[in-house]
Length: 156
Image (cartoon, rainbow, N blue to C red):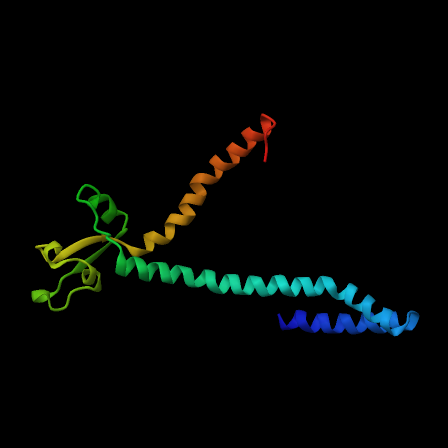
């Protein structure tokens, strides 16, 4: 980004000096501002992109932490074999005499803790797969819908 800020500064000076040779000083400044405007717009977009990606990359870890601590992730018995074979599970324990329980059990009432001391849960990383999976699943449907609307002459 510093490269583009420096480029803007140099372009402004270059345009100002080039215009000042043929135009009065107040017009030269206006010409320089106008010709350097695309670089200024690029800087604004780049600033927004930097902020967007900084926030976006925090989303993944925040979602995993939230899923780890605040969601009911117990695997139903009917899916346990499939989930285990695909390694989509996480086994947590209540610990000896319930003294060293996994943090998952902080939000589970003690009466709902498993009698065996172990619980088979969906892995928290699966929660990060929901958005990409839905995009892959629904994109053809949305594209088909808009193609249909275009064919009947009622596109948005």
